[in-house]
Length: 117
Image (cartoon, rainbow, N blue to C red; front, top):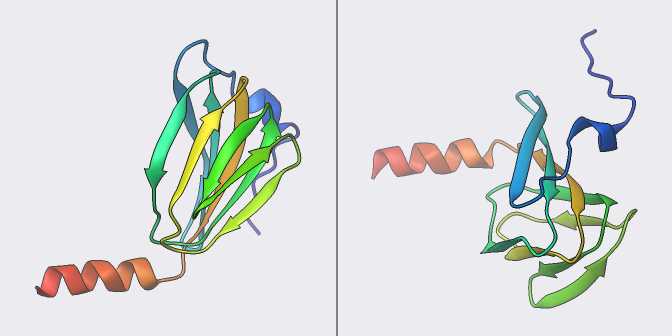
């Protein structure tokens, strides 16, 4: 059985002094895992994803926009986001986030539909 083990996610990425850093940790046919580092004040403006996603705060504080709600996130905060949920992130301090994208197959169906048009 193939597996991937990381003993300490926080040590996998150094938070940049200015900007946002993303580091893919794992990807296969079912899931994609990305570790993000945000410097204080950086943000991802509102956007959506075509697949379900799970977000976990590992370090730092942020304001998460989930749909119409603004939520304060701290280490240990966790969020499930269904497909197409508008979301945003503003780092209130240096921030590390773990993002897990769950591939449902619907994304491939959408791509096939776009090819037909």
